[in-house]
Every structure is written in structure tokens, then in C-alpha cells.
Length: 177
Image (cartoon, rainbow, N blue to C red; front, top):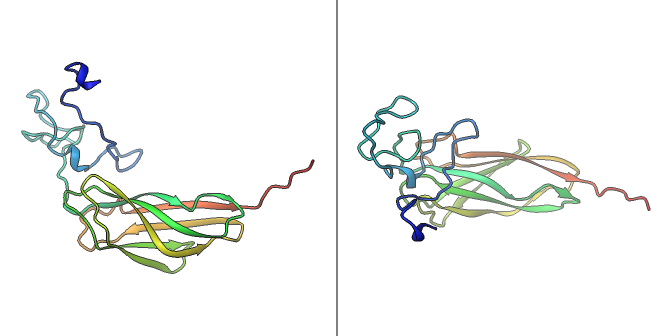
């Protein structure tokens, strides 16, 4: 309890949204220049010089104005006896400015690309759920690979734009009584 003591009085609580499980870099706006300078810590984990207002974490970085990421496939999910499904994803704004009116693209099993414009506003350090128009056909049993990405032409950091997720449509198991 922060209010009950002076401990953690300068803390913030956020998910750092690392680039991957193996790459613990981030450029989350809420961590940018939010640290306290310590004279004995002059460089970061990559050997870059720490600024007078350092970033929280092991890496010194500069947040970007436009940095969008598809962070998860919400729907569809693997299940038995799927039919046509709506496609919903979570999009996170890692950048330091409000984003809207950017294309989001979907490719299912290597087929044609479906594009829809995200027209809502996503504030820095927040996410929104995005839904494509119409449904995709997932009625046949088997695997379905979804490749979904943001595609803002002014994006300055592309490695986090795309999610690749495979879901499965299973037949209902036979039950012998």
C-alpha cells in the first residue's frame, strides 16, 4: 500500500511490453525519461549513455510519435465446431502521440489481404480492441493462420506491428457411454 508508507512513493506500475520474450527492450512512453538519475549508473545495458532524466529499466531509449502494435488475437480462438467468426485484435499505442485513421490488415492462411481503417483514437500507452468487418470462414476442421498488422505509412518502428497466431477448429470428440 503506497499510501501507508513512504515505500514505492516514486514507483509506477505498468506492463513494459517488451519487444519479445528474448528481447527485453521497450519503448513504452510511460517509462521514457521517468527514472531518477544515479551518478554511478552512467550507461545502459547496451552501453548507451544515460540521460540526465533516464528511462526506467535497463535500456535508454527515445519514444517515437508513431509506434503501433497488434498485441493479441482476441477472437477467434481454438474450439470445436467453429463456423464463420468475427476477427478482433488488441492494438497498443507505444508512441507518444494520439493515433487514429490508420490501416489494419489481415491475411488468413496466406490468402488475400483484408484492410480496414482504425478510426477511433488510441492514446499513448493504451490499447483498444479493433474488429474487422464481416466474418472469416473457419468452418472446416484444421488450422487457421492469422497474420494481422498495423500499417501506418509514417510508422518508425516495424518489428512490433504484426502478430501471427494459429487457431484450430476441432471436430467434436465422440463419446462412448
